[in-house]
Image (spheres, rainbow, N blue to C red):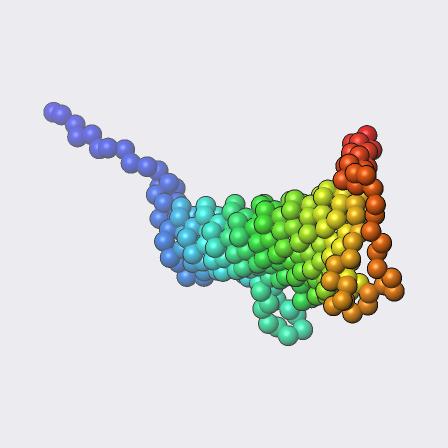
Length: 238
């Protein structure tokens, strides 16, 4: 007499685990540490659109998730204990749980940065509004002005040129609009090293020097300047 053979199914523990797997849109899920998440899931991980609230810090994230991490577009806010209100800190793109792509970060004071990010650091093109009113617009690398950029000061002066590690470095022009003068030349670690200073809009300047800058009479002024710049660059490389 033949015996019927039943197909062996997965163990009961595996079936129970499959039934408890979170997938799709769920109501608020509380973690053991008190954190709470409301939104979409995929195979027990936050995936899709959802809102996370961290109990310890009170911080809140609302946006896109991918395999358990903030990924896509989202807004991160912090809770101010005095007012009990949420204040936006970052709004923009995320990747693998970090600020990555284009976004705006709001600092404690009136400062803010809008531009590109790479792994939680300002990198690429961006614009920074400082508390004192100065504005920098240009290239960044690892949270510092690096590359080509322009900074405009509250007194009307501005610098346009190269930067390295947060300092003026390389060729650049500084417009002293308050004095009606222009410096163009080489900068090293934030200091002007070799260049020319000429009158620039002296008639419209609010506080021009008493005397205009005299003209330089050299056989080849450009050659003298090039030789001086070469010397400064050689010393910098040593």
